[in-house]
Amino acid sequence: MAGTPIEVGTRVPSFSGESTGGTVRLEDSRGKAVVLYFYPKDSTPGCTVETQEFGDATAAFAAADAVVLGVSRDSIRSHEKFKQALGIPFELVSDPDETLCTLFGVMKTKNMYGKQVRGVERSTFVIGRDGVLVREWRGVKVPGHVAEVLAVVQTL
Image (cartoon, rainbow, N blue to C red; front, side):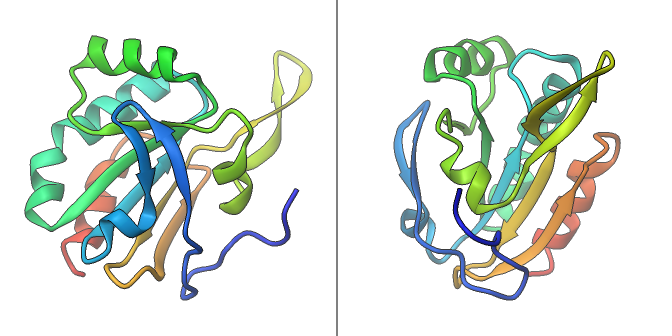
């Protein structure tokens, strides 16, 4: 595990990951804002609603000169099925080794059915056009979240 997760106001180190559209690199989006949302698992109820809402808002994010990327530990194959089933117009990044999850500090111990399990805490990060982390949301509740993220991106 790496050190402390990055903090708001600091430059996000360069990263890359395999996605449904090939390798994505942070530097490929320089000059655009990047919305990076982490979710626990493809095809589960909360993750499906959140991903659909980001999908529905893709044109508005694009109009604000922002790129949306979803990240989970699921495989590319799982992501491709999820993306196709929902008709998602943006890429989903596979992070099975938790590199991005660790960089952003989203791995948490959670209680599921009375057992302690380690998993992704639903979180969203906005990286400014200059590569600096502008805003973060941790422990996200899905209702209203995408609209709140969009409002922040539109002020950049």
